[in-house]
Image (tube, rainbow, N blue to C red; front, side):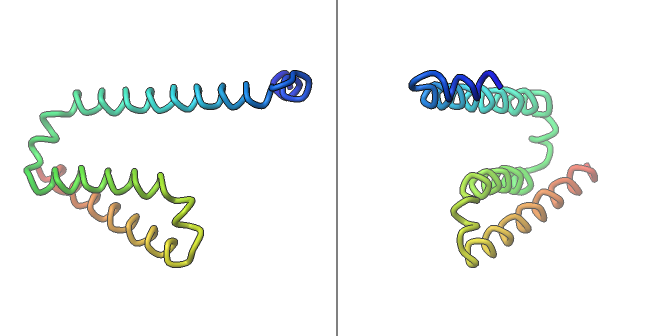
Length: 106
């Protein structure tokens, strides 16, 4: 309620809220990057134990997932983009499952 009141009552309150949203987004991205780096450091030996092919599948799948999720608003705007997004997501999930099975056998 206080934020809504500040937006309505204070001149230029909308730009202040935009700044606050940007700061919170950057803090959230930094927090995600920290946890990813921490997870990588904790599981580095297991990741290198996968082998080159499975490690390439893991990194490629994660990269494609990040790109698809970042561009999902544009991809979902058209039927072809929606089909492409679903196909890429299915491919990434299949690749990650293959890496997981390989890791379980190790």
